[in-house]
Length: 418
Ligand code: HAM
Image (cartoon, rainbow, N blue to C red):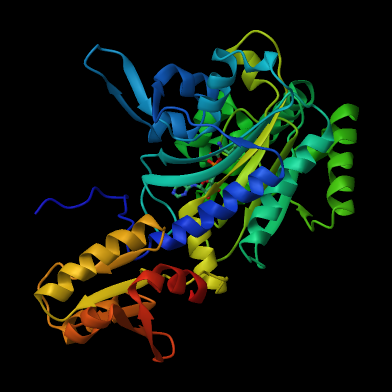
């Protein structure tokens, strides 16, 4: 037998209802904030991610699924959704439409990471992006959408941490300060940190190596280097979140793992989300669209990991709808009744009632067992007598009560009782 590739997972028919529930809440929540769905390709030109996500990030350097297609073009399975949405926005001239542009997505994404709890090589994201608005209210709106999504799922123990990583101008000063701080320690830090020192010292703050953490703990903090405009922007984001009753803590060590961010960055974390703990992350990225297109377009967004959301929901025992079976199982006792059951099932389905009939030539007892196992709500039994009277003996599997229902009234009965 050929096994599933490492770091990927099957979602089985018996568990898909959980995904449908989270996806439904994601869509409904996004739409209450006037975000519309966008669908972009699973693969893009490699250059898009190299430029978009940034070539000092682990994602681009170590984790991308990149290959040459048969036309010798380098393409990459998307490691995240933001770069593709930005490309689609520019390529389709959406800046000429109604602004701000607001879009959400439910996608699969691919990163060649070391798999562990909550970390996969193929995973899924619910994300949202908002373009065109530079003010703090757009940051607050995006964070509020993320917060509402988590609340609508019934999650109570997911905490919000925010930070500001400033703009190009104030970050340049900060990077300088970081270099001065790290320079004497470089020989004791990992190879990645040494490379980051040259290319993007901010990334060193994020290093997961235990030894490097000893040095990053006392490093200068971006929040102390913010310019006047960035500071005012961050203060307003905090005021708006406070006003909206969204609790948060300021965590100066959040820098995020992607290069495109500026000003506000945020993460929603939970102890139940695996080793990393981040369920949802995002922030402002005012320079990405300019790098990819011509004109600057301010932008802010987030993405949540669906697998981590489901892990946290299970740990918190969050409400989950029942895994329901069909509304009505039609059990036939003999050949003629089975034929009738088949015809009745076709009629019921045409009226929108989900139902099932026996396809395995089973006894009535075995049909009942199957209906019970697959969680059918009603079982309508048809035998010789029922055929003669044109009625079915309908058992409600929830409370075991039975009623005789005329064949013609069966669809209506099921619709009313369910
Ligand atoms: P990210 O922090 O790389 O941000 O990913 C967002 C979320 O995706 C994470 O918080 C996590 O829940 C989930 N995730 C990431 N990698 C994995 C993995 N290997 N296995 C399982 N889940 C994972 C972004 O992707 C940005 N594009 C978010 C964004 C949108 N920023 C602005 N707009």
